Length: 431
Ligand code: AMP
Ligand code: GLY
Image (cartoon, rainbow, N blue to C red; front, side):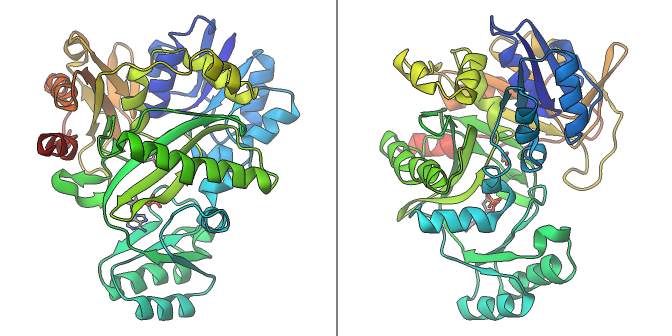
């Protein structure tokens, strides 16, 4: 069948790379894709948010199945629009995508269905939000309700910082309408982990656990980014904790949505803080994580396309009866190579060298995020440029592999964290 993947990041390269291994896929298109993706799929110059253009393309080219990578088109209702045309698509519909598009919606659902999360209050004007901050004191967390490209959360260490966040979001509208409502919530302490599951709203098949690195510099210093690296599994999520997260977070959420008349199909991503009082939900995403996907999919042995089709067709029970998803026991780590200046301003169009040498290293894959192919060269074309991924027996080995490949790669200004997986390696040594 002909498959269309929507998006242009490292996550989409990992998806296309894995889908290309499926016997079911005869041709893969990617809109708009990137330099690396263009080696595996036909890249189509249609933007991920051009829903009408994408519907038209899928109809014209007889695309049998479309996979949506980023959250913006999902929140804008791309799944509903494809559905109206009888086109099969992987991802939640517009109502279900509110789990990411509106933090107020997802917190209210968590509250109603007893999903563990930080204590919170919702505000639709700045005055009462500031008063509440005075009352609870710092640290506390201020969140814009709507989508803000990962920048709408401020973990404030002081009351002033929290008040400033409210002013920026609500009064100065730093994120436009996304800041018309804010949440002020309790600051949780602990280690974070990402739990992703496939669901068709009736059945759930979890993926392996993973952990992201959001801050730009080593030791979790500097501003937040889209993610500077990831590893899988996350040893902090023990077998018992994994089960607890499934029961208290995932099942309650999907059942809760169903009770609200919302059928959730696709992948559901729960950001979890492992606190001393147990796992608590930080956020939901309605799509694969980036760069978690780059650390998860190399471990997947089963056919990704088959599982995705089953999620969309509500036949995941068949996949479960056939033994579920098979995973490689090895660990996987992804190190993001970013452009100089990222997450602030950065240049584009710089030549990337060493990709061929890196490709020769066994058990590594270089996923492209912000690249473009120009004749026979790859140029930088974004903030996060590459996701260099390694597989190894333990996390330490997978990290070693990834850094070995990173060592071959160069572009002017390239920077990356040198401590990907360090926490997990330390935890392992302690036990
Ligand atoms: P979110 O988009 O809600 O996941 O927030 C982005 C990041 O902010 C999370 O990955 C956490 O590192 C942090 N964060 C969010 N909510 C809280 C909280 N209640 N307590 C502590 N940190 C938080
Ligand atoms: N890695 C975090 C995210 O995809 O939102």
